[in-house]
Image 1 (spheres, helix red, strand yellow):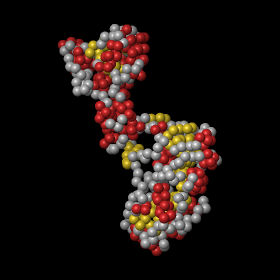
Image 2: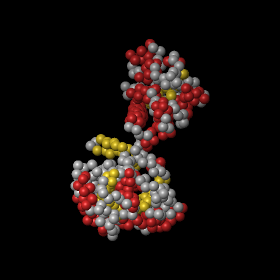
Image 3: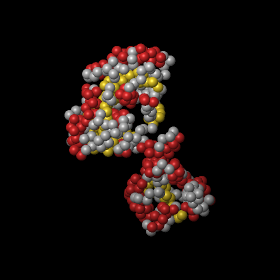
Image 4: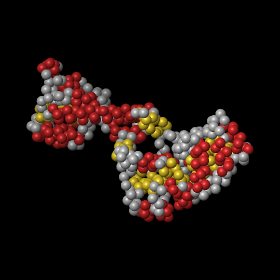
Length: 511
């Protein structure tokens, strides 16, 4: 018990052969007998060493297109046998060889997941024999050495070289722990893939959430944080400091917002703590930036900036006058890129695509909530006009713009828009009335006229108080989801006060 093990035999079956040759040389030098199958057997024989075929031990060839090769009592008996008189007697009785070392790596499930969406190919790369060999050898680590990762080949080689072909108990236990870690993470990856398939997640998405990278810190500097995913699939990082938790959260919010706006309509948005505080569409991206900044220049300080078209030098020069955390665009002119990356602390990202996320997660109560993302964006011009007065063409555009903004602000929220510019917003309020008043106050504070402005609400009005406050401020058109049993009260007020109202039937809470 707890003694060193002299390695006299090794079962070797690996998918990738790199780094294996040096370990094979050391094992051969210690007169180890090799057992193997298929490509691994060919590899060892090409190195000049004899190999006993597994099928010569089992008396069965590989069957079912190679799905079954090592799954046999004459293999697993040799691995799982405790080296005592009883078990060794049974091995002798049934002509089963003792197997002192098992070297296995698994079918490349993760790599297959990353390279194809073909479910049949992915499923075929779920290893059965290999994972069974690893678990059996790891369970019997008191008598057997398990090597489940090519990263350990050199470590085991050095032990064998320095210990006359022996592996200590503590070393075997260490390798067994590593082997179960390999087994556990492999099974978890398969589990997540199958759960993802069941819930409609793409293999790409499931692969990405398995990747991880540390970030500078969490929401506050004393909090550690890790990002699971692959930023490089979405962004090319041109420069700046390492991303923090807050940076990544704000970047995600910015991307989800800007994808609402067509690329042929230059639009610029500024976000702070995931909330858009400035959004504007104009004929040029410079004018759009100036309009977005004018929405709330105080909140813009230290924000995340995003454009839906290329940023040119003139726009970059304007942006560079203000402190910002991150700037994002689908492209930059060469001189604009040079200017924006000249400050090493500012993060500059090129957005590769505007693909919307299909799902979102939130950890809560020691568990995880999962939901479909809010990808709905209703067309205001096709929604129900419920008032006697209909919005004119400009008001329709502004209502649509307001609806795009309201969807990306924390509830309860109200947005005010005029001429394709967010001129006021109230968000994160416990009362929709407070959100309405906050939006109007912000618009007035920054000098905007609300006469003829459009208003959007993320949820219905249970009372007419919000439209009453809006009317007093000069707002003339409203879009809301409807659904309150008292919708008619707000509709009646609009009819009595020359206001138009559109009901979409779709709520956009964002908690």
